[in-house]
Length: 182
Image (cartoon, rainbow, N blue to C red; front, side, top):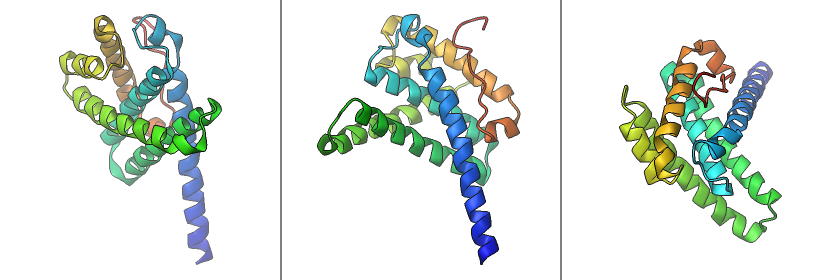
């Protein structure tokens, strides 16, 4: 029994470490100024939360390409970590405990809906029309900049797909491709 418990704790700690690595990389990338300055994402709390959701959807899409129980566990835990991050961000802003649950629930619903829509659109190869539509419809970016952001997301998708599965399962998502030629 002790060996099983130790193994379970080691697996849990390993998953936590991988999720922390992935969340850190994806969040930093989501907050890069290029998204807000050149790609029309509103530089607001909501806009930043949506970019975190966008990057999470890209990561979860790549996890689904890898498949298996480890990838499924990482998807679940990464999404939970994102919601914890939203909660922490509200607390940093000084939102009171009485309204924080409602605000986080609203962000969680947006995260879930937008994430699903993005994953579906990202699975349509060689067409940015669906992706651009999702970005516009959800107000992720200014309507005239949706094509630029969609192209950036396709570059991330290509970069993540080119990474070995082992890198992806370690949370080491390569980033920094939001502009052409980078």
